[in-house]
Length: 566
Image 1 (cartoon, helix red, strand yellow):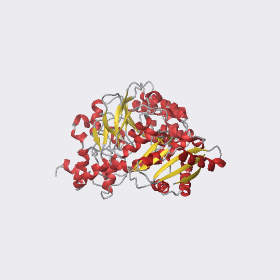
Image 2: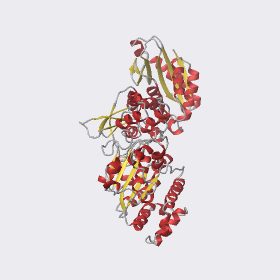
Image 3: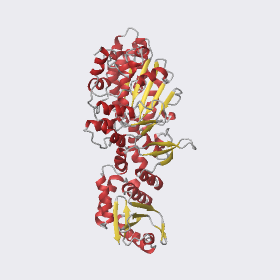
Image 4: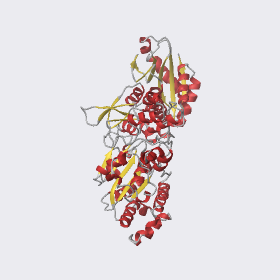
């Protein structure tokens, strides 16, 4: 066995790196899918600033760690041998000459968090202090400006003001450039994590103003910057934080550039199954975890693949609950009937045709109709089935695989009613179809208490109508048809559920909003009378149903009253 073979055997490990995102730890202790050709691509044709957006848990942090270990002067000793036998070494000496040859800054913002803007700034200050401590040697440099050395210590000892933190990346690139005489490679992982938290908690404007300076000062016309790579889940509109940055190259999941860097390709998954001695599991892996399309590349979910292997090849929805669904909750709560119908159709392999707007600004979420599908795509719940060539930025979207089918309705449900499980909703509809009106009212009120704010439910019949429609459309399977505002008899019913089996009972619902809790019973009676007087049951009779449960449902705030008749 020659020296090269010995090096390759050293790093041949079949343990799966669940939750490990440090490149050195993975190479020394776990199975590694070789993504080092990304290094060659960056050396050959990097842009000044590259932003790559991918769903959570698709290997972004590990890949950024790989870049740091390869390029960084400060990691040179640690990196010896780590790239042996990998694609970048096979690319030749011209590329390996870059190993340990550049000053590099690597910071991840994924753990920057807080309930207030002040706490976000404090959390960021801690992260920057840790970053600056790794460069404390600059305080002894003979060529770094004394004023910058003073600033270095302020950040390290967590005494820097918010304004000083806003230029921290710029000043660190300046110090490293002075010290090494070389421009800096800047790596920023999960750049949008603080922005999403700020949007969720109500201080989005303050965060955007800060991030515009924090990122802009380091990325725009910075003589100390060689190039920068940023990763995140969302492409935040250029106008919001990247204004004036003309050198930004956005590589989203719709582009071919770097399309195979994050996630596993079919060839990589096939090699993995061969390496662990289980090639027979490949069809099951494909069914459960394949199906994503980044650019024109077919991609597997990497977290799910390695979790499957690590769990004795048991197919499970390992990707569930890996992301924050606050934005989806906001979007789904504003979805109209057609969008909810389309969301349900996706579960039954019916693709949805949509126009996408990748540059949605957070404060436009809820106003832009394309935002819901853009978010479902960028966060990994949907993927592109095909382009629609006759229309600009219009695509067919679908659920990518069996795993996402399993988590889709539950995750979307959790965007509607946080803290409820699937069993709760199955139980709700069991009560509905068996005429148990009192228990149905109790459970429905319990769900409303979890979901509906006082503002949302204030005397708006349309809210309750949409809420019930959404639950029925999402959680009743293909054996039921859900109809809303359809003509029947002498008017239009609010909501009707038609089982495909006409021997089963159908359901009619009419909703009324009461001005006070004292009016609830009267309003429920009024809704039930309307069903009878306008003969909404006519459509059921036409279709051959002999039994129909009729519900008059009255709401006031989060209080519910139900009257039922068969």
